[in-house]
Image (cartoon, rainbow, N blue to C red):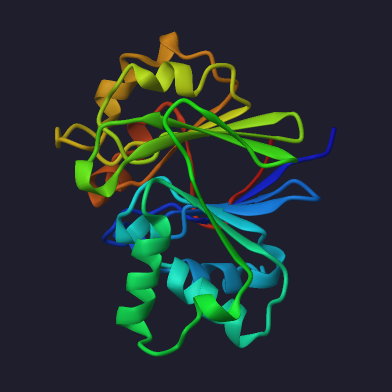
Length: 245
């Protein structure tokens, strides 16, 4: 069983609260290395952490909001400019290739980035396990902006399980998503503010005894949540943090 390392490239919200970068997690399982989400600031974060785009085999996208997939065009442009030849997989909800191609055309018209790379776009279906050879992805429906096609993700690699809520209001689906996971990264945008599509800490705290995951870490904080961390009883992510599953 290989050691699985996870580096937090960014764990901030859409507004960069506290100066944190947008959501992006780098998972290194030895023979398989991938990103979970790739927000707009991700390429900068990767370079700050000394991770080359050529080291990344795939990107898994939880939903189509800019702070979770807006960095994909920049990562692909970097790959194309630097002459990447190995396959690059993008795993997403329905319509990933169309959306990313449209973004590239808006940001870098005429660059024809996708034509310069060996790309494979894959789309997951809710509750179905996608077998990617050395790793597997299972998507769960969560509650967020419907047009962004939000999902929680359960990823199995090298005998370890990483669960990730994506962006979501409270839903009991989180129990199945994170069941006995080695690590569960759970969004907790607010401390006590109730906003549809996001979690608040007080709501989550009342349900903590019901979770079976081995380790829970919170992410995606607004300024109110950052100002209240002394009152939080769950581990919290920070940019640059290293985890071993």
